Image (cartoon, rainbow, N blue to C red; front, side):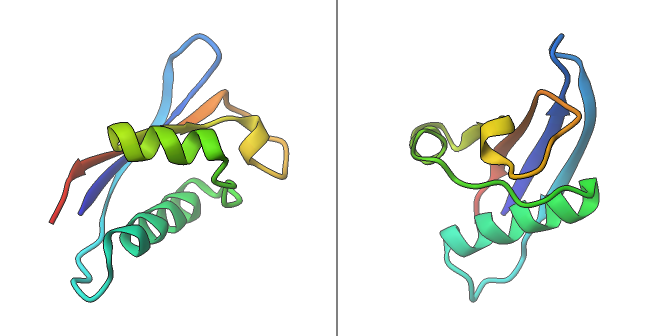
Length: 89
């Protein structure tokens, strides 16, 4: 599984991006997604966001979601984190 994560500012300019690959075939899709989010947060030096009901719904429908300030406990210096599946196993 490959997931593309991007940070955007309030003017919709991309600040950072990364592609995370999770190759552990013993994990199910949900655990791969959680692992990719954890790896993304480590790479961007962020606290892990909370999956709100709206975020889960967007991700289930579109394989893409956005984490805004309300998903993070600490203050963030960007507008949102976009998280998108590029390739499934």
